[in-house]
Amino acid sequence: MSNNVTYHTTEEADVLFMAAARPLKDKATGKEEFTIKLRLLDDSETVKHLLEVSEAKIDTKTNRKLEGEKHVNFSSTFAPVVVGADGVKLEDKAIPFFDSRKDKARAVVTYKVITYPTKTLVRLQGIKLVSVDLAPREGQEGTSSVAELISKIQNA
Image (tube, rainbow, N blue to C red; front, side, top):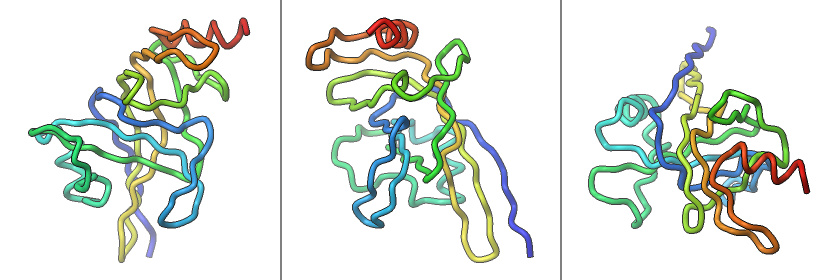
């Protein structure tokens, strides 16, 4: 019996966390994974879809969400394709590590759903960074756009 693979795209949403240049070790599984967490509205098509196929992707444990929103995690052991708002692919150092306690960003995520006879998996495929505003890092100033971020990295 074969599996079924479909591809989906989220609505543009606030980024809460992103580690797309280098994987992070998952505390529960010990596997290294690339990850992004988005803030989506309860009634968004993505949330409705994920409630049908893989409810585990929706973070129900967080106490930082507001009424009417869901925090949704996407991850993969394979590096996602990351592009800027202009569609240009970002490589390695041009992909920011992101933490919403300091930084602000909006993104659209592409994910694939793999349906097996006994389970369904959701995997991160790609990230389009629509806007990025990074707080100053030690020894650096903040950035207000992906293009500005890339320029600062290339000129460093």
